[in-house]
Length: 412
Image (cartoon, rainbow, N blue to C red; front, side, top):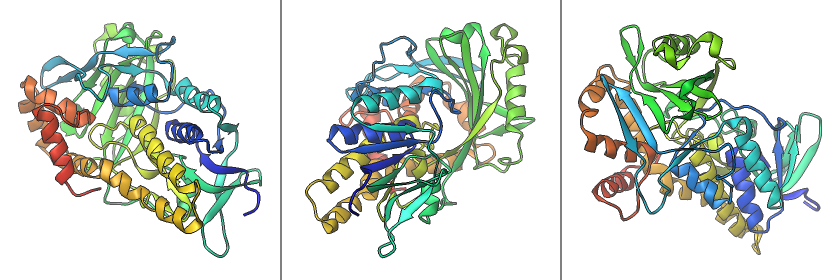
């Protein structure tokens, strides 16, 4: 290919795409970042960021001390008739605080950060599929809705759960991986400046306890993000009106919190949560998958933003090594290591998460765990580390147990 439009094209300017682009630009690689919408724009999300996500923002020099970033101390857990607070663990690898920032401008901040680092961003460009080399079948660019084509040496799919690029390359979802759904809305509420992210471990549909949790995250601007996430590991999945379930759940809340229809500042919106590497391989014929396009959401807690940014960093490291001073054959060998790098980093942990969500999808398991696990503070501190994937490599006993389990579990 004689004159590519960029060394690398990244499709999608969400957290995964902007992180990938930022790290590539740090390595001196020419990046074209294509985003189908125009900023600012909304995305369905809980808006809560764990210390794992905060660490990535710090790594990318995002100014999290600027106005609009709301810090939190930890997680408040409600369930089994109990209500208690767990501070984020003090670790060497991660900060001891989380953040809340709405996706209305969170993604825009990350995209602008990438542009400041030399990335070329084009908004309002809808990618419809890959441009393939007739002889090799490798992707050499992308097609857009307006009939244009953009060429590059490598393409990164950061276009989310419904990724057109991956589908265009024949990569379909794996049915043996868990899937979740999240619905949320915003309410004007006096709880908007809460110091803790709040999670409710008991979601009832009549007499049935569902596998999932509800949340109340204070946004700090007079509103609270209120939502729920459910897993497809129960028989009820797909047969529930999730928006109605959220309405019913909110009606059970104390009236002074203001979670009423008249205080709702926007509609109830929903999104799918692709988990545990549900689309593989993460590299094939010149296309690399990052974030939700590769199903990088943590099955334990539904967290996606941290892993979107982390997989973007990993992808950028592999790409930078591959396209600098290498022959085509050498480049391909290096790029093909990317799936194994991801499996080594997350595969065992995601397998543990799959076992966890399969277990809580069985009748009685969720109820038993809530009833017998919540009264034990030490066990719950262990659970916070496990579910949040928050450990040090050489930490305390709980860190060593979690790390060992992740290491011995078969990769996802």
